[in-house]
Length: 531
Image 1 (cartoon, rainbow, N blue to C red):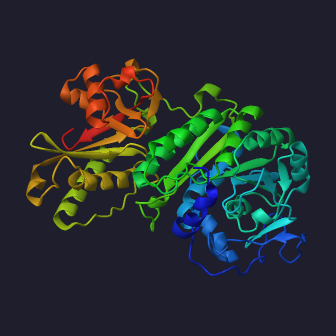
Image 2 (image 1 turned 180 degrees about the horizontal axis):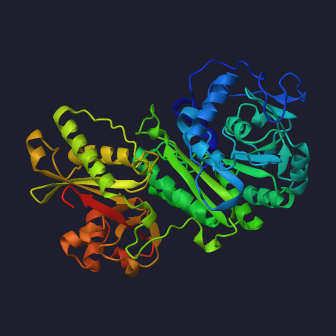
Image 3 (image 1 turned 120 degrees about the horizontal axis):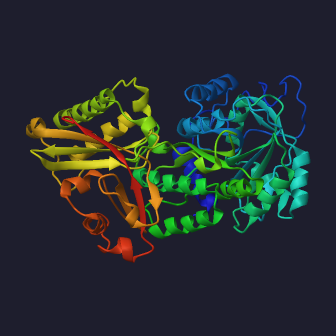
């Protein structure tokens, strides 16, 4: 799964290119503190992917980056100082909305040097390669390479060396520069580093070297896309789990999880992180440097893009690493206030918002069943633009008629998730035939808006009626919504046994007999036409 070279052609061909002309107007704009009319550098790495991954024209590129930043609100992640971010590196048409969430966190930040990390997509080599040019060029200008810091890193470990050749056609580091040139004040420099895809402990070596040599104003960017080429739903599941592992800052857990996903043999899945060694470097550095907060900022995949194909996607995540605000406890890392029902009080849907979602589900089903058309909606309510999972349930004369949902939040807004799940509930639930027009006036609609799942280590912690439950072993998984317990009257053993056997195809008692079985719980806001 770490074979980044094998997947590079797919990245270029399938999901990351914007079909544009070759390089032009390079070096006609300022950036990185340099004046285009008075270049300070002689040995310059030219842009390799301008006109492919991002706009080649300076004005168009400036507008392109600013457009995504303007559409992004800076999240309050209770972080006093951002020391590192993870950002995607696909073509901007696909990944820029997620990248902008990361770069919004460092907008205006005084920065000395940015160390940019990724696994090579185009070459195999031993160790780690730092580019030795004096500067890198993009349409927004030149950014100098911090040779002093680079020399210190090379002196710190023999596995780190200069190698310009492997950087020549690589896109993964370069695509970060236009965002950096836009959000950071002039004067910052870079150290571009590629891992040679030969495995080993290079990430740990580099983390130690960085800990010993980074200054207080320096920043690290781990450039990485996430799942490569599974279906949309599989990518959502795997990538959210990956983000959960990243948040632990436990590299051993990341290695274990990587092997686990390989064993699931998910169709199309080739890697969970194409820049995994850069991400592991930041996770290792997190512990060495004494950072105490990790914020998951945004997730989406290429299937969420206007031109995206949901049968074969690439995932994108933005994460910030750093120091918690002085008023925040380290133990409250990204937690939310909950009442005794487990529902996030700051995120409750109002009655009007619930009615609007029910209306979206109903209008969608009626339109799709009658004409095959999926309606569009102009939704202005900011709450309904949030990224949350949801289920749509249909009942006919009191009997279940269809129920399909998305547990893990994707890049789509809540209202769109409800719309898409309404289509699926009326036409794709394989337990039932598709809904027919003469059934429409007999249907009742129910929507469940879900909290993010969290792992539990003991099934006794499950509270019937409060918790929905996910059971998973390898590639087998099943889920029950919280209301299933109330609707069936099952006790906890019946609930979990049916979940294992009926939904996951596992032995009924696996939840207590098999230590390799994973359990996750979530809560739901459940509402219908008459409630």
